[in-house]
Image (cartoon, rainbow, N blue to C red; front, side, top):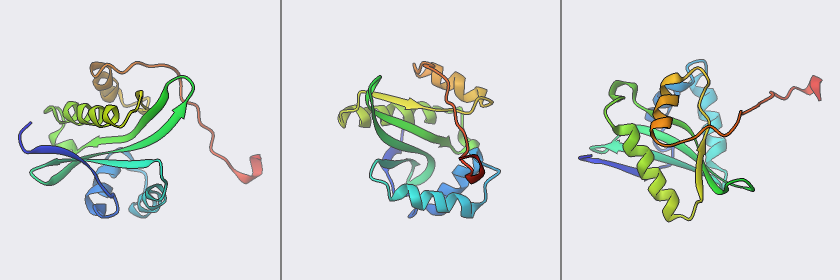
Amino acid sequence: MKNVCVELIDPIKNLEKVLYLLKLLNPEMTDSQIEKLLRQMSQLSNYRCFGLFQEQKLIGISSGWTTVRIYCGKQLELDNVIIDSRIQSKGFGKYFIDEIKRWAFTNEYQSIGLNTYVQNERSHKFYFNQNFKILGFHFEQKLHQDRI
């Protein structure tokens, strides 16, 4: 792709555009909630933020988490993979994932994993087309003091 590149970024230094992109996937959250979580995430040593740029303009982001698990070895777990909705379906997502895969391979990861919302059927088709496979179900329980 012409004038397009992927770089590791500091999401706080790109906060305005990162907030815009994250709100596309998380419209129920406020900017301050997202910013607070971003600041916490950025402090963790296993966190990376990938930025997709076109002509030096941030058009996509993805969080990447380093984990090591028995079933997959050193894994880059992606989350909040987002391409600006105004330019989706133009090949940017494929380019972005391919470049992240290249980065992961160069940095000695054995696999890439991700979660996607059940209702986000468009993303399911996209990830199948990128050769991702469904391995299981992701279960979650919110922790509340009265339930512990």
